[in-house]
Figure 1: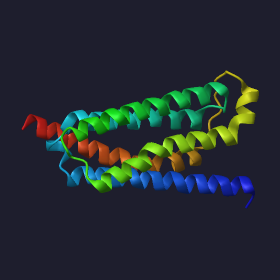
Figure 2: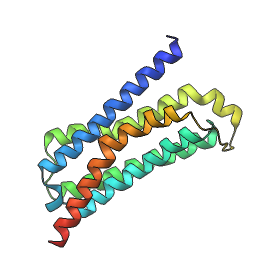
Figure 3: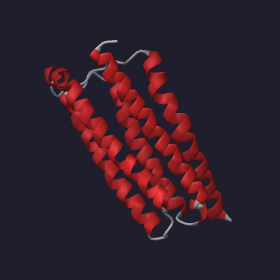
Figure 4: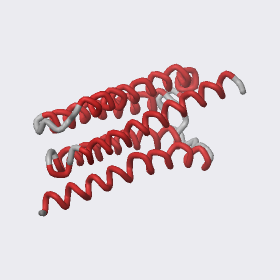
Length: 172
């Protein structure tokens, strides 16, 4: 395995660990009965966070690395952090977050920034040469599957269940 291959392997392992932390966070939400405490507001914020980073992931899968893509990713990660703060405020006001969930949030808060830093370090020469253009250069289908199936199973499906439970609790 080449050094680049090893770096991608470690990055992917970190990505999967981050997704497991997301899944654990949703398990904590069920344990603390989010649907009946902070409810639809907090669950909606979780959906916004998923969408923000989902757009970034889709962009990296579909587009050639460029300065514009790095700038877009930075804006999406910063927006994710802002929504994450609003999410924590929403839950804190209801005293719903326990110590384990707070530690899980540490991982969820820092992982996008670490990933962004790795993208800058590993793609800056290519991004610099592409300049500020956005160019279609999609990854192979197997790469899309490897990067989108795990978050679908570990985060998107649990969020949909959480959102549905929050809707039900709201109408009850």
